[in-house]
Image (tube, rainbow, N blue to C red; front, side, top):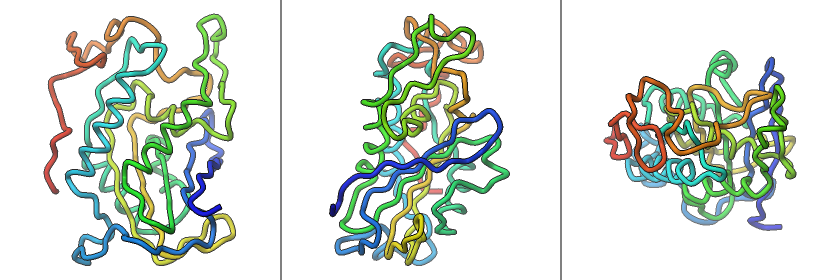
Length: 245
């Protein structure tokens, strides 16, 4: 079972919300044998070692996924980096808890988590594990949303993917935490790496589809002023190229 992917759902009983989910990328009890994020990085930056390149990778991949959704989205918003969300993710990742949080923030912010222990995995590996849930997700047809849309997931969880493509979840901020030990559902994982991504506004609302189906950019919020780029509502602000804060 080494390096096998496992998908599990972290149920948060929040009113009218689908639970956000978490992703495990190694067997319980695994130990790191390869390179780890944070090795050779100054201790002051070890809690969140997310390079500008990694930030770009995260944003570019999310926007690629959002631009290519099927059926096409009429109101998909271009995702941008938000340093406030990233700092909140950094603070949570530093706690090395396998849980969503902090609770007060979860009322307003969506969150995807991924953790691995064992051989080195890149940020892209962790992102792709979320995107792979697409194969289990069926977008609800208009006639099914009467008046509320059903949740159509044939796998154990699809809420990583649906959060990635939630149209109004435009600002995003992520962080990595390197953890000596993390308790993961009754087991202790040594030398684990935890990825926390925060999204605003929060997605995965019960009874709602991730986006409106239609001609790309045909239903963008008025604040975009008609701007459209690569099938997404676009305000002119591109934060893919970010600097270290």
